[in-house]
Image 1: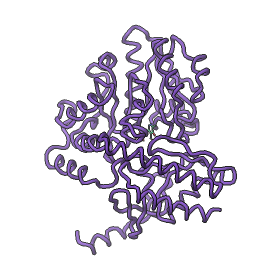
Image 2 (image 1 turned 90 degrees about the vertical axis):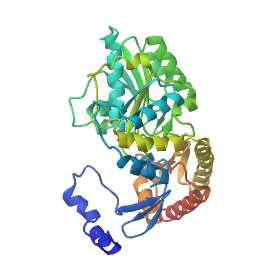
Image 3 (image 1 turned 60 degrees about the vertical axis):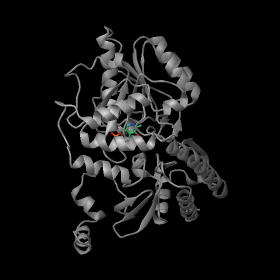
Image 4 (image 1 turned 135 degrees about the vertical axis):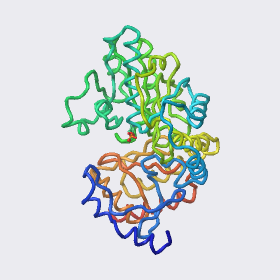
Amino acid sequence: MNAATDAAHAAEVTRETFNDVMVPNYNPVAIVPDRGEGSRLWDTSGREYIDFAAGIAVSAVGHCHPKLVAALEEQARKLWHVSNLFTNEPALRLAKKFCAATFAERVFFANSGAEANEAALKLARKYQSAHGRGDKIEIIAFEQAFHGRTLFTVTAGGQPKYAEGFGPLPGGFTHLPFNDVAALEAQISDKTCAVFLEPLQGEGGVRPASPEFMQACRELCDKHGALLILDEVQCGNGRVGQLFAYQHYGVVPDILSTAKGMGGGFPIAAMLTKAAIAECFVPGTHGSTYGGNPLGCAVAEAVFDLVSAPSTLANVTARSEQLRAGLLALGEKYGVFTEVRGLGLLMGAELSEKYAGRARDVVTASLNHGLLVLNAGFDVMRFAPPLLISESELTEGLARFEQSLKTLV
Ligand code: PLP
């Protein structure tokens, strides 16, 4: 296509088209992104943005990274899909790399975070029942958690608004306050199948688990024969400066789910576990048509190589300090934040009383100043730039953020 036909094609649809043809479960912002490169995006009018959102912590190595493009192109010319009647080399190579770099001995591939979590919860229930403990079904999850939109995962999430109107919901869930060791001690019992949490809650307001809480989850699971399932869909794949957040805490799970950054924008997810747990998923018990397809696995292998590189993880740590310091300084100067928290390049800033409820306004003001940022609820700003963002891009993005804050004061 030449430039003229390209432009004519783009002119056929606009943001308004969304309201005419799409189910209204989303409310996208006014601009329509057109192309991206590294930590920058351009909209259909050609306007440039610095990206502190990375597609909600997905574009881990930025947009259109040449190594991802090369992996995708090479695999696209070779083999796209074979079904799970066959295995394939990209899936096997990727699973080997996950096993070598983590606690895992077995890997199941899925297409989205919700599906990886669905597999994790089903595996935990199956594991208990396969060992003659069919009444050990309680899953303890936490308030403000987010685990996905399937009926099982929406029930596991700790935000009732996402489950309202979809009942009847699956049973056996208990929700406890996050980071509350005493509440967990009081609730967990020999009927508990699994304890399920995000080490760093993302959607629920960028809240890291305390080290004591993570430790208590592990110890109490061991005491009661429950499985510890960590949802690292948002905080995994290098985002916190380690390949996975459990490595930051030094607390090893029994099952771990991941997605988002794993494919760098290609839809792919994984559930990692130990061999002794995996063995209850015998042939026929669980599956997915697209899970582990060669195309997704080839891209995810290229992502893995990049995000597990020491230089990337060192950049996450350095940029994290820069981002935290920048946000703290802005918070002080404009009285806009009460707290800056998070790990690595998943950072949250709680709006002060004066700006309470205005997180979406801050997103819009930032957009108007050439910066993509996220909110997590009405009161928390969320920052999740690509892990490879440079020092100067981060500085420039913070300057644009300051300009947008000025319009709100
Ligand atoms: N778990 C966590 C922690 C998430 O942040 C998300 C998505 O935001 C999910 C699960 C669901 O992932 P997906 O939208 O890919 O199903």
